[in-house]
Amino acid sequence: MSGARATALFFVALGLLAPAAHAGLITFDATGTLQDGATLSGDVVINTTTGVVQSLDLTVSSPLSFTVTEFDSSVSGQDIADYSLEADNGIPFNPGIVLDIIGTTLVGYTGGGICTVGSPCNGSVSFAGTASGLASNFTSGSLTAVPEPSSLALVGSAMLGLAAWRRRGTPSRATFARNPGDDAAGGTERPRHSPPCPPPVIGSVGGSVTLLLA
Image (cartoon, rainbow, N blue to C red):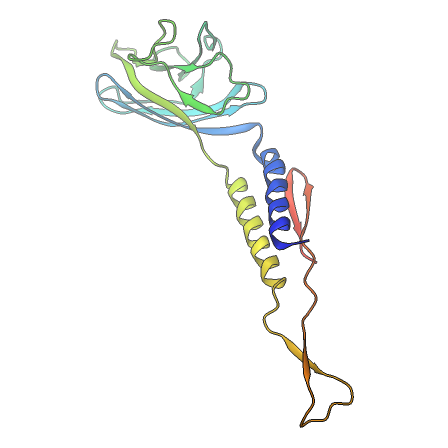
């Protein structure tokens, strides 16, 4: 098998097997800006297989200045044109954040924007507020999937393994063998190369890619 063909097959297999390593729980980086100048930061962990929020930790900067760490499942859910994700600290809006996520389900969710003042979803707009009555609507915001360390390690290991295989498959120098009967003065030599290494064997064990070098 040629090096180019083996390389192509390797990356095809990697593309097919890698998604299994990070399916299910995905961490999303939450960012946004509100009308009063406050900003949103933090993360939301979503089980994209079941469409359930597993955990969250969101902070809104000054002038609202608060952090919420609980997903309020009692008031969150599908709306007409969005999924309303509401977060607080056990008491609704004491303080709280409502992120109206574009799309009506979190099953298979890969990230994206939220409903804002400039881009409402059937009238819905994401906002944040405190128990004292301070509140502000979002002018921008999004949830962005964060690559898992295991996925990055998988790709890195695969690249290193492929590089090692390519080095092993390329002879560093030719050796020579003298034809029988040739004397030292007038004999001829013919090049003798080591046989090429076989391509790597790729398999899947527990949802991860295994690279075996012969």
